[in-house]
Every structure is written in structure tokens, then in C-alpha cells.
Image: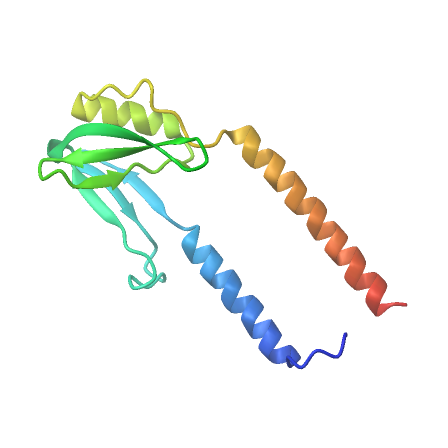
Length: 145
């Protein structure tokens, strides 16, 4: 519309590939079973793009908190070889996950809180939808004027 040198098919391809990459990055799955905790991705996500991890309950010896650059706290599960595994912090059912970890490992998880609360995501979603509406309005106005 503005005379940019980028061909429209290439622009659309970039949008589609970006959407697929975003969906892949957001498709992390956390599974808890009787053997341990598993962080994985669907089969369609290449392992080159994202790698998961798995840890048996018997291997978890400690949990350590670390401060983030933005003032939050993240937690790492530590195994017997002192390898640290980042505890997933943005999980639906976070409290249920921490209760299961506590029950299986005996580690105190009472002070482990999610990095962001649900209300924060609700605000972000609201602003994202508002921006999308404005984008559609701008595009509509530009093409029908």
C-alpha cells in the first residue's frame, strides 16, 4: 500500500512463518507423572528449535531461587550432579504442579510463586486485543479512503 519494495507474497510468507515460530515457542508442555517431571514440545516442533528435559523425582535434591533482572524470582530444580533445571513458571495449574513436586520430593514449595499472576495476563490480553482492533481500523481506513 505504501510502495514498499517488499513483495506482498514474501510479506505474507514472513507473517505465516513468524506465527508458526511463535506457536512453537508457546507450545511447551509440562507433564507430571509417577516417575518425574517432563518438559517437552509437540512432535511438529523441531528439537533444533526447542529442547525439553526430564527429571526423575528421585534425582531432585533441592530447589534454589534466583532473582531476575526485572525483580522477579525464578526457581531451579537441582539434581544430584548439581545440574539446574528451570522450574516452569508460566503454567496453568501452577499451584497443583508445586503440590505434586512437594509430595513427590519432600521439598518445601510453599514460597514458590508463579512469575506472573493471571490478572497480569488478562491485562496484556486486553491491550493486545485493543491494539489489534486499532490495526484493523488503520488498515481499513487506509484501503478505503
